[in-house]
Length: 390
Image (tube, rainbow, N blue to C red; front, side, top):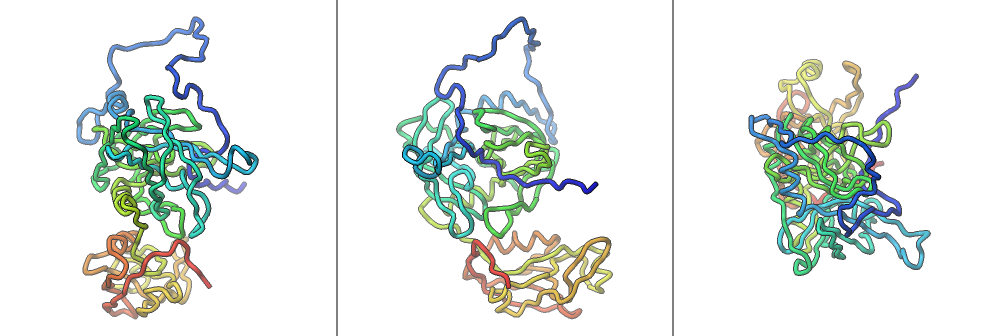
């Protein structure tokens, strides 16, 4: 029987829903009965990869006042409820000015350049206060959205952004959000892998994503992923599932991408990313030997976008297919081995290195072409939301 393929799900929670206990006390709907509950005088403690203490209860207590639940309304819910929709998600307080970070897909809808902001967005704090937020902007390339509320209405308790480049595999983390509308939910796990490439809201991928086995479900979108110090290493963004619910393969937008996006959006700016217009495939030692290359690391240029910067600079894409070790490669074109003198160790490095530059700058690509190394200058353009292919 064919194996069912996993589904990638963005994890905003769509639909009309009621969150029990919003703005009320913490009373339980449970009957209680005679159920025995085991108690302990000490919180569970886990040691992280550095041997220091990771205490989820402490992380939760120190950060929950900076975590919010978000409800976005699309359409006229009062006069045309049949055509309106609500998206539920999560977020965190970025600063004392009232700026709040979430996912772009929580506060916007549509595709490509036609993506539109929600008509109304409401933010609920741990105190039960609910404020309407202004949408400062959103970055569909990183799936980061920025909101702003009146900081005079509720005390802002911002969380600290970590340096996500320092996140390591095996590091324990805490995830807080509102899965299925259940506010202030804590789940824990470890960093399963770093440097993943995952789907964004455009034709481009989010580079450097953090993979975790912590339970992430619809409604967690935009909620913080926290290290043992309570610092934000990323925000929950999507999950890979074969069942439609969490299967222990979740992904988050890394903190460094959040920092960049928020910086671009904060002053009313638009997200800008440099773009060269190629699709690539990974090069590894055995494939390099098969192709007779003098480098076993780099990015094979599979396709060049017509009229894009790489095309204008003369970069060549593959002209034939090669089936090797069970995979198909588009070969015969250029292999990019460095950008501005910085070697490419993995194909994903090309996007990261180009992404660190700005539109209008010139990048010097070192390529292997017909067995010889050449330097090609490419004038970078602003990345489009969608790529037009023939």
